[in-house]
Length: 124
Image 1 (cartoon, one colour):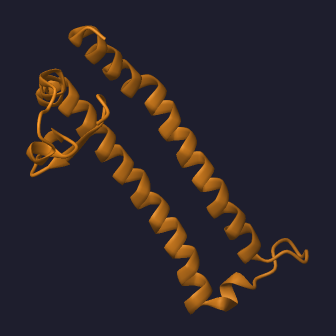
Image 2 (image 1 turned 180 degrees about the vertical axis):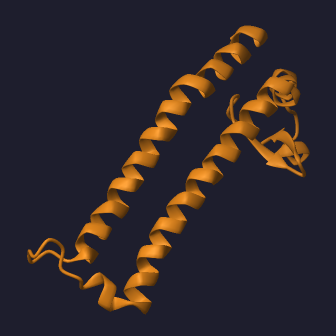
């Protein structure tokens, strides 16, 4: 069992495997029960679900247009041969990269700071 791995069970944070895993390191239990660790897990989880929701809305919106209104996707843009569908498809891909960048920026600032605070508090 990894010393830094924990999962959420029943609304509280517990080490992976819980009581069925046998002996659990008391240091892991202390970290998992600390308010700072629970704050880190809650913030990271909430932010991840928000980004996931945004990506699903954009992706399924694009797929919905393909499925239910092909004529919109076939509109020529700027008198060229490229259609609106092409630009929307590129937008979906670029949107995924932007969301990834947003998550990485947040992870490198907020989540790393919370992790560093935990390491200092628990001596690792």
